[in-house]
Image (tube, rainbow, N blue to C red; front, side, top):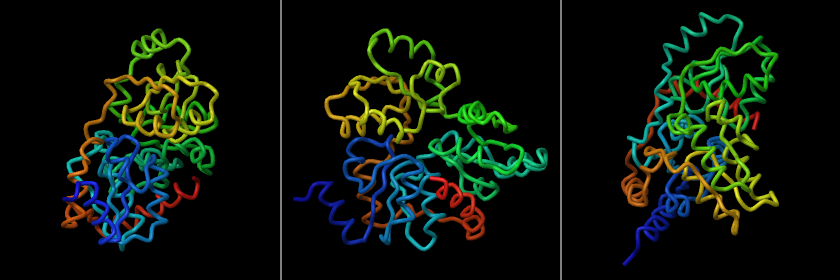
Length: 300
């Protein structure tokens, strides 16, 4: 009798499907995926695949981005209730209003946003390339949506740009406190501190390295050190341990995103079986959102 994993492998072959999984997904989902990575890496992978079906294990905005880049392919999300809280903190109508209130500034939108919001942006970015994108703008500045923490970090690295910050945030990274970091440092005095730029500024001030999950992975893999405090969602532990055997990683254990854990082996098998939970977007939204998303990828 086939196991769930064996059925997924068979169905994937029968459907000519590819499985993409974010770093924050469950370990067993990461292990069954064809590609595991951060938002930027997975967006790039979505443009390179020759599969007919893309199963995107993550939250809904990620699957929407894959559909924007692959409008002719079938994009499935294992659980459509896996909604990013930060992506809901900004609406397309609000972006239109912000544009009108800030003439001369481009709207730079974090990829953690809905497809309809992307359609109103000038350019998308991820935590990997946000500083590069904002610093290269020809405009005097930017309206940065929806993450105030990433936007604040970008502003600190781009002093020549006038940046208007939205007031959205990732509840998971926002919850990481200075006290938690100090306790982790006291418990692991030899550990280097790595922080995701979605964390608050006072938390970033305690970090040795600031960067995306992909930057964290590369840093830990190349570092001569063997112990790290990692200030991001705890799902990243699995990928770090797989890629950096023998090294130790300590996380704020409260930093767990329930939405990122909603993709399971059973839900992946289910959508591959019946091709359910298809991501469908209005053609106009896809057309208008593609340009800012493609600008993001070109800066990768």
